[in-house]
Length: 382
Image (cartoon, rainbow, N blue to C red; front, side, top):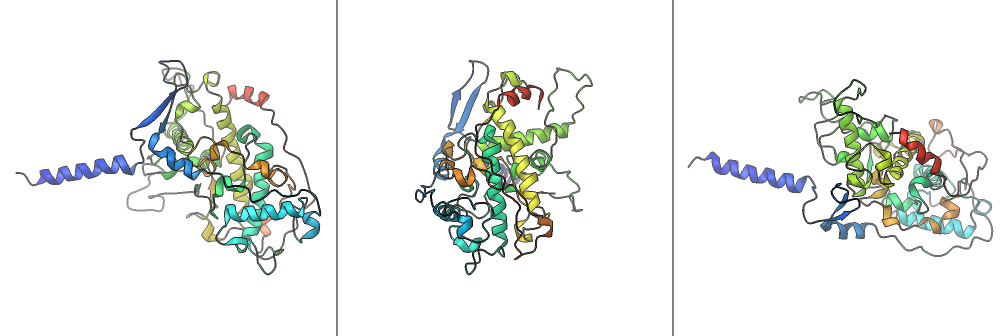
């Protein structure tokens, strides 16, 4: 008997097992739901074995208590309350207790405050938290076309962790720094943000931070010179789609019609919601996350020194509607559903321990979004 045969067989079994179980593929049994005409391939699939774990991971915590909106204002009772000063004392204390449970249940108040002087800004996380409250207010007021009346709270992303589980930073990968394997040009290695595929690893940077064009689909069967998109650009778009699919636990048919992926008129309405979601993530990363770069210490940044950023997975955590569409916002409309102060300190001059006083208040309440005109315009968009 040739000795190489058992070794080759063992290697084949090992590689096969690694592919099946290491790549996190959706193995049977899966449940399918037909959502279009028979024969059109319009069906949704769900991995049956993952559903119980997803249910447990997306349970909404009970509110601590119902706050009294009457009484003295927080800005009059406490020092250095720059964003939530219009809340009643009771509402303010409820929000502080809730955000502690949502973000730092183990560290408690000390995660953001000097417990000897709660008004002080000497702990950088207090400065970050203030800006994140403004960000959440913007999401709930300006991006109802994506979040709807369900809205978002700090818990939507944090789930009891100081840093949300699904955030990302620039990853240059092997090769860029002159390693022996050569320059891979940001692909051909396993990318965690792109469904563990070898597609371009920094696709999120192109579409969820930069404004790169997503349109790559040709309108003719054969090349006619009108579509200059390269193979890599097409793969980069595909990488974004893989990320969105994995983040929402949804397959392509959730947003596209299999007979015409590019045609908005034949697509399910969820595609419009996703269109707004891409732009919402861009605004969060461009306006709120990267602006805080001078505030974050090095140990809270990525390997290349950029700040951690949000993606679809940050809020969705594996389900199509975060927390299965259960709203926590209705308990915190006055704090997170109202834009209370839009002023932004100059973070480039940030010095730890030095309080930066914000400007005048600019208040606008939660109002229904008008998506009709904008949704119509999508027919000519990506």
